[in-house]
Length: 347
Image 1 (cartoon, rainbow, N blue to C red):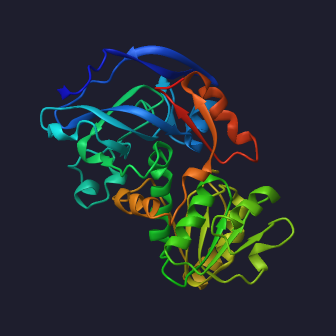
Image 2: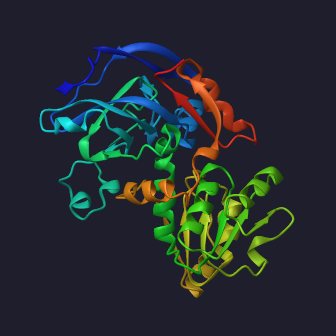
């Protein structure tokens, strides 16, 4: 392993040790394999999956059954490289695609490495994440970013990648219309991304007036209060529906708002099972699908952020030191909060 600074044998990390219990500890710095790089972590965005593990200890079949380091939206700087990685990568500022597929299974060989059954994904039990001073990742998943992008924006390329995958699945092209349920972080990033993909009508629904108002400044052409308006019968007839809420009622109404031959993409973390309007789906030949992470999205994400087509910096509404990670994970309880960032190597 070569580098410009000595990588210590241990590092500080915020470790989930029980329900709603995070403790800053000294833990072993992860070993760097020949095809990996060591990254000194600069910024880590807080994701809904992090809060789920923090509060509930599980997401579906993924169960926290031992100490776990959370955090998978991150940026940093390469400080050392494995023996198979060119030494000139040391010093690069990078955004991390936080996954390690096997490269050999049927899904990987088909280009769908996000569906690799052997995937090791940051902050998904039992794989540690990035609420820590250092992390390691395969060299191809450490994406160089221009100096015009802040550490925060580089970290938030990860949720932007979710939105890019969503727009691709939704078939958004110039002139498309789209309904997005939920004006939280993913909903807001999806609205911006839909605009960048050329959507001409972007409707965002949310129960909270403050969030609806915010959506208008991030690409929404109109907003709807789903309590005051029955979305299912409002005649929206959109080309695509994206659920970023996880609410069964929002999913049911949103699918009914899709025009014939349209698409519905389920993104939000919600119920593991829910009712769907099957007759509507069949009679109008609506495609209903989900997304699970992403493949090959960072080049597009870097372009959209670097050219200002998607504004990531203004999404940050909370900044926390590593010791304050519990407060960061609870910050979503404030309706005015949008995106919180933890800084493991400062403060």
